[in-house]
Image 1 (cartoon, rainbow, N blue to C red):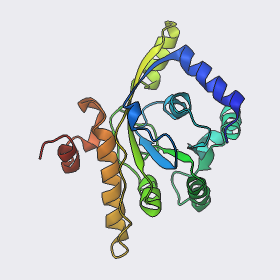
Image 2 (image 1 turned 135 degrees about the horizontal axis):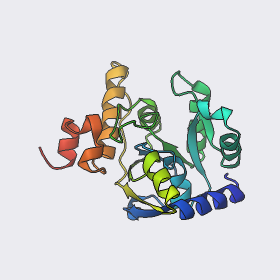
Image 3 (image 1 turned 45 degrees about the vertical axis):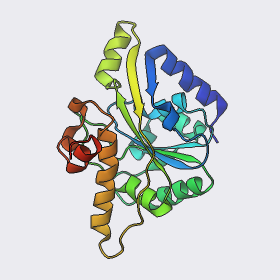
Image 4 (image 1 turned 90 degrees about the vertical axis):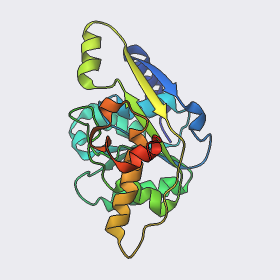
Length: 222
């Protein structure tokens, strides 16, 4: 469970620096476990879930590199987040995440694994697809615009709040992984997740998935 003081602090920070608009709120499950997946373009992305979701059982995965930052360590402890090694198979983080999902919690993931240097989607990694396929839980796609670090910092210098838009799509589920060709199944599941995110973003932010056949299907361009 998250610490109330930390959640209050997150709310205060976001109200001071951002003006967030949430579209598709009706698509967010009101209870039960699910996996939320979204694009990652700035440092503000991570805390948006605590700002916009009114639940206490939210788990965020945080890159190990931030362990060196005292403030990040404080927030990770207070928000009950999970440290994860993005570049190696982190079985401990996966076990902890699976356990929290089994208890009915919400897990927030950025499948790209790192911030996009261009603002457009970069290649997704298989972690979110693995969890979704293994658990069979609903996946909630989210598209974020306006949180680029340069834009946020520029507005702060001018004492302006940054307009942020968060678009939430409909939940979907992934089938169990094909044991005969696990790698291909994981890739297909990852592409499905990334295409669902891309469909919620403006064309300029769809990155390498802009011409993906699955995105064209989702957008109606069969």
